Image (cartoon, rainbow, N blue to C red; front, side):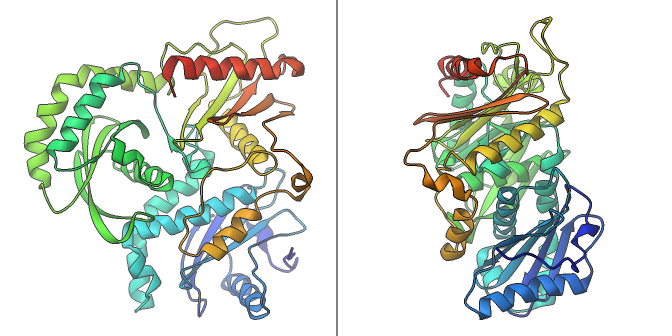
Length: 444
């Protein structure tokens, strides 16, 4: 592992902040910098690029390093054209290497989604590319902000779609399928407060990273009643654009379709939206009210000592999370609930702890640069787990704030935060009960 020289003033970044740099791979010309309000000096950016180029010249692939003060730096080159560098500040809650690797991959996919792979891989004019990359800033900034928000979106880290499980999905699924077919498409999706409530079969066949990024993109459209947005699919169609048609049905409720040159936005908005969605508007309002409380339907009853959970379906690459805002009933042993933002943060930390040490990620590498992707993926796992002769299926962690338990089955991964009052020996029972409560009721 390379250790960055202490002379590099990475400590100027505040703790828990991340700065994202984009440079040309061949010449190291800076294209943009996002994230921390305190920008790194050009000399430091040049040094970070130079040390990577020096390693490449010696036949070494430099993917990450950590400074003596706890800052982290991660490099990644895409298509031999652009280099992305993520730099995190120091501190006790330093950003994990997994998060930084995911950030670089998500950022590249954002740029492909908006501009297309050809524009990025075959750079003709640096200044022109700088201007075009500005159209990606809002999407990239939203990904940078997601780590600190309290809405519980985890898809940027897990590469699984953040889902809402409606109480009555059948009527909405029928409306979505009919609407999508009428719009000459097979790719349709209903988003409620930024989460995928329902989607057509073909939408679910998109790469999980594409579903996550499309959801983030639509979530940026607050205040827009309709839009016709050209998008490239980073895995499915990186060089040919599709049209993403989005329509606001109610505040925070959007329906989206991916289609070709037809139909027109005006035709769909004026003739199809009202026809298919007006009859189910009350059901949509019910979904919005449910999403305000929890992505899980009211029929799912959680134990009072469950503080937060993340459930991943390993086969479909979908996830659902829950963070109760209040306890179903009080107990003399109950500890005060932390803020939802803090519990989501702890859940992200525990997910990172589990997947980098015990559990495996199901996603296959789909990066254009497979060699770099494989090296980066393998480096996310701690060395001490390599000596195990079996695949762990459970793990737990006890902290000063809560107890954490991870459970892996052939179909699911469950990450659970519980009160400290739960006996450690009972954590497995609580986890299996929670898993059964969710899957038996929803079929997730």
